[in-house]
Image (cartoon, rainbow over all chains, first blue to last red; front, side, top):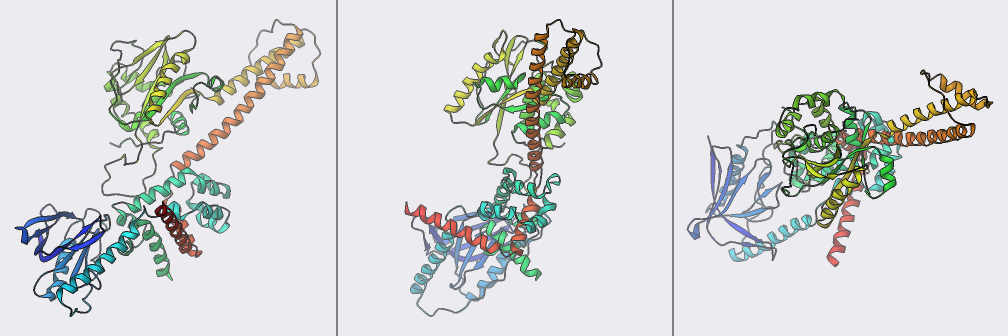
Length: 264
Length: 356
């Protein structure tokens, strides 16, 4: 059994040199299909160019989000938690009330994919309802949209400049030195030290050891990798923080804060 | 069948590994300067060298011996992750003066009639060795859906080559070549001969800016120190006994010492044929040697204690510790501050970079 959805929509092109998002003024068709091999295949055809296939990609449930862009008119974003690539689409069906339904169908097809690991990924976040309809002429509308989209994209890019934070950035040597003398920290962490090293002096040495630093680097790497959602879940934390926070390390911290807040 | 894991190339790891498979009195040490004669002398007896370097390409084929001494043990490297362990074993199995233990003795007997490839294969079947090797694997705290790849990107893949003396000749044993490579003959000191070949390699890799390390497989220094102490005590015993015999009055201290040592000595030994002065000199020298040996012993004990701690940390899964640390920081209200500080620092760095 396979599932499929076809959406009439146009696309935007992102120019990495000028860093501008440009609307592609062409009629298009987006298809998403869950095939017999349990693969999610995405395709976008340019109908004004003889149905030329211009986007083709495999998606993975749990790492893919398709949602309406807030404050924009009929613009939808396809984004990934394990990849920087973004695709913006603008709905083209005559009846704009069908947009929400198309989006739902799209997400349903994604969720129909069967994942091997027993971790169940919840439904996609609920689709935003349209706020107001713009009463301006279409051309002006598109220019305005373009401006806002550009801003949005630039914002997201700005966050991505640089390699992001690592766990060793958070646990500065200053902080580690401070807690290595802290009785409360020692009492809380003692049982998690190697079994033959559960004393205050060894606590200090462990915090400064290359093996500890290596473990931090290993965890940082895992939190930034393809399977970060799975990693966060295996740490018994809420993976949904990844929907708002792209950086796996920051997501990890926020998940811990969230967990503590939920307890209270 | 369980796979062989990657282990860290560290002398502490290798030393404990050797001991775990039943070898006695042997350790592995890193050599920083092959020309440092004093350091080399202190490490003697050295049973072999291991040269390890970062593996980049297939590597050139070298001229190997097709026919060689039947007693020279050579095996091909078949298991990638076992390359270090195999390089060490190739030294141990070519050294009759080392007590190699049951596991290695059995392996050698079993494979002596097989060809080098088969020998390499069979190494994988020796459970004691594989278990000991794998006990040094880094903990894998997460389950990933693509678990088949063991060597991740960023992992260093090293290749190991051994140098040994064997019946008057120095050989290079490279598990990826077809047979042993003859380096040359030697008279008294094999290290002089091996040095040339090794220094050539070092120069080659320094030019290519490839990372490398040189290790020695040598007699355990504690073992050696204990032997020296034993021998020296024996000498003191004999010297004192002879002094007594030739009628010299022993001091109280000497009498005590004689009593002490004679309680440890069981064997009747012949007295020394020396003059009083010679005997007293002998006494002094022996005492000095004991002192030096005891210093070595305490240094080595400290070193092995450190190895033990490091190995314990290597095998430890720190994830629960890290998680609890962050949770504690949250409880103490420090976590958000840490995040802010780190982000600020990063911002500053970026701004500085953009100014350039």
